[in-house]
Image (tube, rainbow, N blue to C red; front, side, top):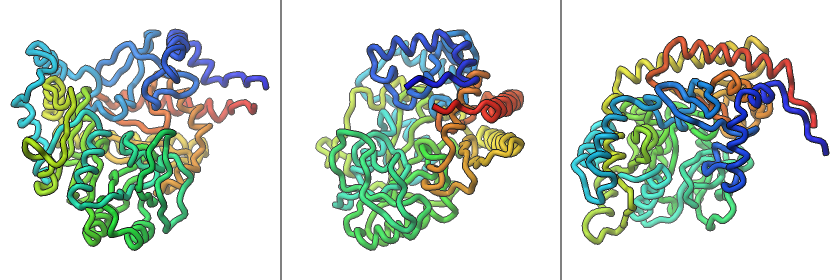
Length: 445
């Protein structure tokens, strides 16, 4: 079978990024898929970064990009944020990973409890995967039960019990099922899965397995599936259902904590039992946290705790210093500015696609947006799965060729250094990329 010639956007990207293309070809000779993060393995090849500053990223070919990825939502202040860099360097000069507790650990814990009052006691971790896994372990220890209930399309890290039904065929409305492993090599787990925003499916899962469910694990929006947002009252409904059946509610705020100083739980008016945090709280360093009610977190207390948590770099001083500097510069004023910018961008995106007569749903809130090429509303995983991924891939490639770095799934996030000019430049590039994608459709194989 002959290979189809590249479309116009791919040809433009090839011309602009020969060193990235070569770097990727060399990397695949040693590293499976050429990268160690599967999210970076996208066609035709990822651009290879040289450096970042503020809202911009430069590749190895010297091209500058407006960075709407921000290391997958983790850089609320963009790259090389001055106070964060200064704090990190100062801490490195005091010593790298010191291997002993530091006062900054309690200082950071107090900051998080002030912003997330439900975190009466908390522990730090290195990643969101760890934070969710330990929160789930705490829930099982507290309830004496085995099962978790999660939602299709929801990504909560790479542990076996939650890497389920992330890319599986959608459930029928009003139903639930056993999780479908998202990877080879996962152990069999008893995790149950329901549809997001599907109250009937949740009720049915609890009706049939209520005495076995330790916790419901949920994001305030599906960060891995179109930023589908919890409908008003859905998170409170989950808390009510969980508590009625003796289970706990774990809210995964690893991405959504950028929406407000108190996270999305404050915006939704829900009080979970346990919370997992990450992404922006590390200031570009690997740092996460989990915590909740004192009686649940008591399992980690003492010299011989019921749950032992450890890790060579857990709560290491450099990460804590970077995270504290970042979070101290993320307050109500920054949230308001990002909210305004996010609303402007989402409105602009919708107008661009409407101008070309293309179906589009622009989900998101605060500083985040997602572009799904499908008629809306997109309120569930089933609808999101029907989006036109082929056309979006052409648009995304066209954006890369025009200096816009955006998530391959159509999700973007803003950072505090971004200006109105940056947002206008993005919308102009989007207009041109959509025009090219509709004018030069992908060749039929």
